[in-house]
Image (cartoon, rainbow, N blue to C red; front, top):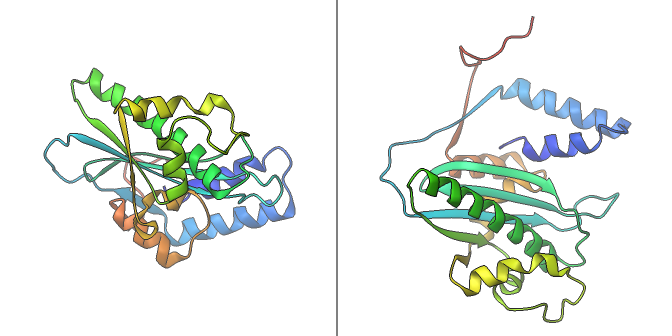
Length: 213
């Protein structure tokens, strides 16, 4: 999860790479040389009853397209079970709208994980957390309100919240672990979020890892 945003940005440049793309790739290589291995710890815990999904966005983070990035981190108790970084397909016109799209994507992913757990006879409720009050309000209300330009295809999640299938809570920005997947962060901030995700750095490679010839 520490390089998901970087890899996402590099993948976007693959069709027509530039000198800046080469610079990004070299920085990633230097980072991997410094920190070749990250592991995710899964300590023993009692079976949780709540699935917590944290979402965040970086409004208009792409300077070329002005598209925003959605970050997602999902936890079952203390265990990080899924995270992603992806560019939003719709150009958001405000920070609140970008957070709304990120929240919709988080709800969709969390419900999918909830369904998979149900197949394993593990019943959990879903709580989606965001650090943006405006995004939380847009998710929780019914209809578009003043945001008439938002496509109605994204409003299905409002019905789930009204029915109590999903709950949306607020998380302080400094504790939002999905921020790691939305933008380039300082080393201090990234290390703090990785620690909160249960990750740690180790030297070398795992004995089962593929080795380059």
